[in-house]
Image 1 (cartoon, rainbow, N blue to C red):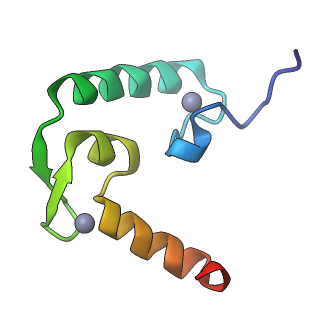
Image 2 (spheres, helix red, strand yellow):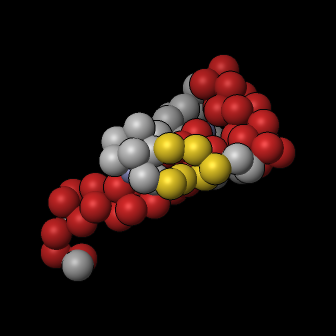
Length: 77
Ligand SMILES: [Zn+2]
Ligand SMILES: [Zn+2]
Protein backbone atom coordinates (compact mmCIF):
# COMPACT_ATOMS: atom_id res chain seq x y z
CA UNK A 1 0.00 0.00 0.00
CA UNK A 2 1.40 3.37 -0.96
CA UNK A 3 1.16 6.13 1.59
CA UNK A 4 -1.20 8.93 0.84
CA UNK A 5 0.96 11.89 1.71
CA UNK A 6 -1.07 14.94 2.57
CA UNK A 7 -4.28 13.02 3.01
CA UNK A 8 -5.45 10.67 5.71
CA UNK A 9 -8.59 8.59 6.02
CA UNK A 10 -10.11 11.25 8.26
CA UNK A 11 -9.37 14.18 5.95
CA UNK A 12 -12.97 14.33 4.67
CA UNK A 13 -14.01 14.52 8.32
CA UNK A 14 -11.92 17.60 8.92
CA UNK A 15 -8.62 16.07 10.03
CA UNK A 16 -5.91 18.71 9.55
CA UNK A 17 -2.95 16.34 9.93
CA UNK A 18 -2.00 16.08 6.25
CA UNK A 19 -0.07 12.97 7.10
CA UNK A 20 1.51 14.31 10.28
CA UNK A 21 1.17 11.44 12.74
CA UNK A 22 1.51 13.67 15.81
CA UNK A 23 -1.33 15.95 14.75
CA UNK A 24 -3.38 12.96 13.71
CA UNK A 25 -2.89 11.23 17.06
CA UNK A 26 -3.77 14.40 18.95
CA UNK A 27 -6.95 14.82 16.97
CA UNK A 28 -7.92 11.18 17.29
CA UNK A 29 -7.53 11.39 21.05
CA UNK A 30 -9.50 14.62 21.28
CA UNK A 31 -12.21 13.16 19.08
CA UNK A 32 -12.59 9.96 21.08
CA UNK A 33 -12.78 12.02 24.26
CA UNK A 34 -15.43 14.20 22.65
CA UNK A 35 -17.34 11.11 21.54
CA UNK A 36 -17.11 9.66 25.03
CA UNK A 37 -18.64 12.74 26.61
CA UNK A 38 -20.80 13.85 23.65
CA UNK A 39 -21.80 16.98 25.52
CA UNK A 40 -23.92 19.72 24.12
CA UNK A 41 -21.73 22.77 23.76
CA UNK A 42 -22.02 26.21 22.26
CA UNK A 43 -20.71 26.87 18.79
CA UNK A 44 -17.85 29.41 19.07
CA UNK A 45 -18.93 30.97 15.78
CA UNK A 46 -22.68 31.41 16.05
CA UNK A 47 -23.31 30.57 19.71
CA UNK A 48 -25.87 28.01 18.72
CA UNK A 49 -26.16 24.47 20.03
CA UNK A 50 -23.51 22.02 18.84
CA UNK A 51 -22.00 18.73 19.93
CA UNK A 52 -18.47 18.48 21.25
CA UNK A 53 -17.75 16.05 18.43
CA UNK A 54 -18.50 18.57 15.71
CA UNK A 55 -16.62 21.33 17.54
CA UNK A 56 -13.58 19.06 17.83
CA UNK A 57 -13.85 17.92 14.22
CA UNK A 58 -14.59 21.17 12.48
CA UNK A 59 -14.36 23.93 15.07
CA UNK A 60 -17.97 24.93 14.63
CA UNK A 61 -21.49 23.55 14.50
CA UNK A 62 -23.14 21.74 11.65
CA UNK A 63 -25.00 24.84 10.51
CA UNK A 64 -21.78 26.87 10.34
CA UNK A 65 -20.03 24.07 8.51
CA UNK A 66 -22.83 23.91 5.98
CA UNK A 67 -22.69 27.66 5.55
CA UNK A 68 -18.93 27.49 5.04
CA UNK A 69 -19.11 24.77 2.42
CA UNK A 70 -21.82 26.74 0.68
CA UNK A 71 -19.55 29.77 0.42
CA UNK A 72 -16.55 27.63 -0.52
CA UNK A 73 -18.38 25.56 -3.12
CA UNK A 74 -21.22 27.77 -4.34
CA UNK A 75 -21.76 25.72 -7.48
CA UNK A 76 -22.72 22.66 -5.50
CA UNK A 77 -25.68 24.33 -3.90
ZN1 LIG B 1 -5.38 12.59 10.02
ZN1 LIG C 1 -22.30 27.62 14.51
